[in-house]
View (cartoon, rainbow, N blue to C red):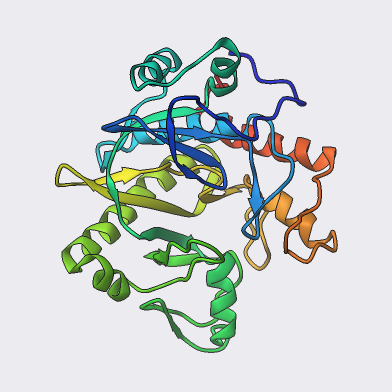
Length: 315
């Protein structure tokens, strides 16, 4: 499939006859009985606010990169992934009572994932191999540049620089906030929420998934600095759900350009965040329109990440 024109941005999808169970910042989720349909739009959010204009082809990148990782990592974890095949999904929509026409089919092509239903855990499973983002901010606040510090149950050595590689990857889960920012928590807190055995399984599986994905990425010239996984239970099995290792849930850095001691250029929406930081916006709704050059540059970043990691063009 050829890529959409730069002025073709899918901000919302409504499928007549289907119940939309979740309207997220990026994905809309539909109930198909024993299955769920995830449709990734081109919406982009920053600072917990959805921008008024999106990034063309972003939804396709997220969908097809997640498909790649679901297939690649399935020896490590059971996943909810069934298929991204557009013809099969169109039939499933109609079988579930949904109505589909050529225009709707065109708008959802390449951006749909059909998955099994799972009971989601109310935590986000974050793994960090490098110190950046909120971990770097909390490390500095705790005085880590001069002394060893304890953060989220992990002892971190003194004197780390921004973007340094950590001695070993760490599991830093977070609450799933309905609104506002997620809160970083410890494994002990996760265990109180989901039980000790499940908490241990979430940590172990997340670390194994991160290690495998990071090893693949670095061989393709990309550092996977950190990433977020979501899990649920399906038929008694711990199941990886939602998405996996995309620019919306991960920090990707160019391995050759990596230099500790500063913020790194990322293959994600950091480009948008940086522009917003300098725009004078107060980070409260309504947000400003993204300029055409920021949209184009962001689209290029998403596409480059996909092509470098998978070695294939976007379908």
